[in-house]
Length: 274
Length: 298
Image (tube, rainbow over all chains, first blue to last red; front, side, top):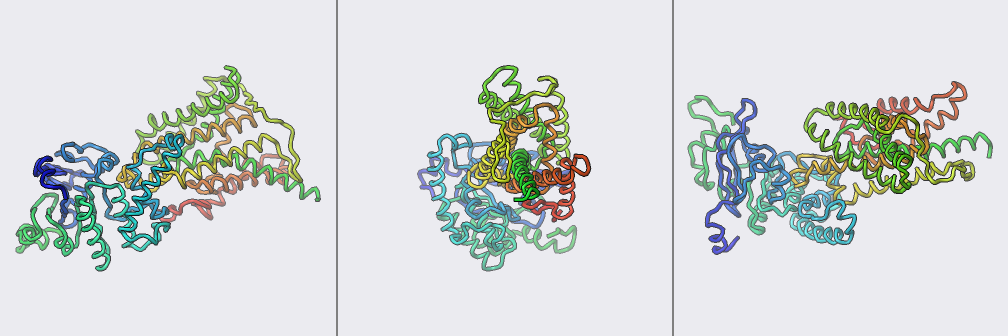
């Protein structure tokens, strides 16, 4: 949490991430239409909506995998709309993927160290020449990764190949790898998808800890309404590629448009596919 | 020890040395495939062009051997980087066939440009290594093969270390594993593609010097590259250990086949025995001995 003075200096309510009027069409499919979201520093914002609402597309545009057809995305003052994913990651935006996307065949430790990659300075030739320097850097980053391992309770799994881990643990390692980037903004695409209740609660706890203790801004896409309403400060609802509601969990829950989107229209005129 | 047994060991010994030298060239292929998923049909031509450059530097320009080898290495690194930037990067995201066709075209161009620029005659690439064979028990080894095998082993070990332990090597494996996710980790994927091609250039330069000194340098040298295919099919397209094992198998098989079958059929078995084995291997283990088993799931 930044002090009130620091906040004022940064412009009291200057959003950390500004998504303004972004649209993305794939052929004839309007995946996202004119969506705007302001994300405040340090908040935990959830994006919800029925399947195909465009949630992941928005996330993919923020992390640079898709570039919007129109509209802009700003990180602070900086326009990141057209930047490559690797550049956006360097600027402090880390993400996880809907389907587990760990580097299989590599150990938990290697996966987490890869998250540090972006923070390491020595290049190929540099590390050949300044061997000692590269080694020292490695040790420093290894220490930070150890902290993460402890935080996520992965101590016994360091040398395990990730492919052999249980599903919930793989999701946790993926969270760890994203955290290893030391991100200012963490994008989580269904971190609890496919988990049982206990695993969900664990994951929710970690996400809250990351947000509260590390002060990392979290943007969460999640299907489990219970979890979303429990941990989010603010919720954005997308339906058919458009933003239909935004507010606190309480406000969103009472919003008639949201209820309609999730339950379908009462009189069956053009029912939504939830 | 009986003569027949001696003859057998002789064939095996030479097969091992030749096999390690095949492994070195196959390593160039594996490095590129591992990092970029591209199948490089011009690997043999890389070796040829490197050998031509080194021998030209030696003979036409009178450079000392160490300088000629450095020129070959530097030239091939620059070639690898340049090739990635100018030909392969624009093909990113295109079907894999496009890349294959590009490398086949590249191979034809190199076979044409090499002699055009440096003449068609067979050149020597003399190394300051004694030509007297060394007798070691039943083995009968030529020094140049020993040096070649030694250099191969050294580089295979170095690249093995690079991929297992170094940060860049691990990042390169990550790129090979999943490009999208690697990007999300802030890894500049194109840089690693370029690095892989440059490494293939390094390996080709060394292979060019060794094979060129044994076989002489002309367009025919590119045929060495054809042996890469049985090697990598046997060992696995993406495995360094596989390149070594595949190389050893091909080296031994072709020597043993030549030793025992050639006297009856008048020669030539050396050239096709590895391919017969390759076809057999494709039927039994299409992903190679050490390769990833992804083929099964397609």
